Image (cartoon, rainbow, N blue to C red; front, side, top):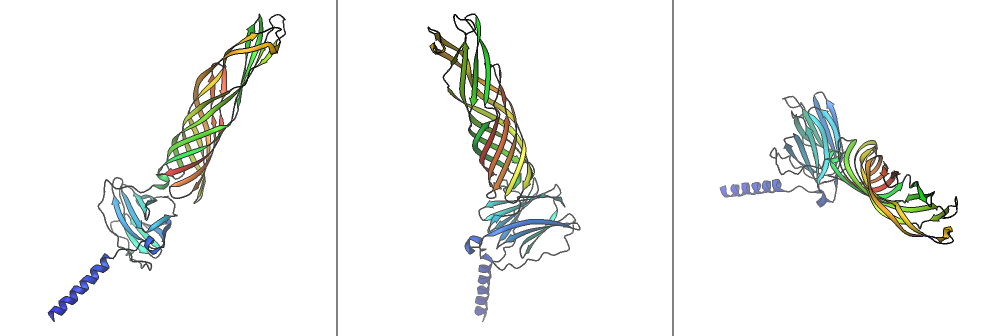
Length: 395
């Protein structure tokens, strides 16, 4: 009888051990992806009640982190986040709520807490998780009760050590850094720069007219920035574009024997190719935002530098009978100058959210740069309208 009773007790212990050790079923195993749909909150008396709506099966773990104080919730088997990346709260000791895809099947929700962290409780509900915060020493009147989840058993919350220095932070959504790469076309607002110089020859004064035309060209751009708030981002960028000049030079040369009988000579046209670099800082302010689309506008201020070529001198042969067609240009000197100065502009950014961290963008930028060219004795307006297509990654 004792042997039978002992065997029965051993069998019951084995069954309980297997039940406790049974792993939670992931979304990948069940074929049902889970999603954090939205995060809402409300103030009830002295409590802050936060509702995390989750569609599909999930389990979760908690982690309390210090310096600064945060409450971290990791939701396993959750592969998609539709909730806003940042929810500003600033109440009952909670400053903000952030979301991010920590791992392919782990979504993370981070509660940023004040210097005096509030107490909290977690309640599994039918359509997600309810988190309650309060400042009072006594717990709230509501006693958390675990709700039944039909799709899979709920794994109890686990408490981990307060701070782990090697802990990888969750993606911070709109409060994160970002890098943006873009390329497109640059259209010069005032493509032609002309100047006329006196030409003294044969005791008479002639002239030489120079026109330098800029052509539409390519533009490449790299930006590194940060979301300061949910609607403001700042950063620094560098753009590079080609500077292609086409020359049109015409000289009025006096006649060696006949007074007031100038001859007109047209120089062969040339293509001069160089580059223009602009390093700038910017600020963008959100005008319109939906779940997928965002439009922003802001100023740019920077320093631009370019190489600019122009005619410095020329030589010619004046042959008999000294008509225009008898003048042969034998040599000309083109000088290259490095011109620089301040740039300023405006940036209109349109963005479409592809995923939590990836965004496609269309930019329209008007950049003013009016450079002084010493050899021309005047300024060359190198202002451009830039149309760019880009990709932005938040990290």
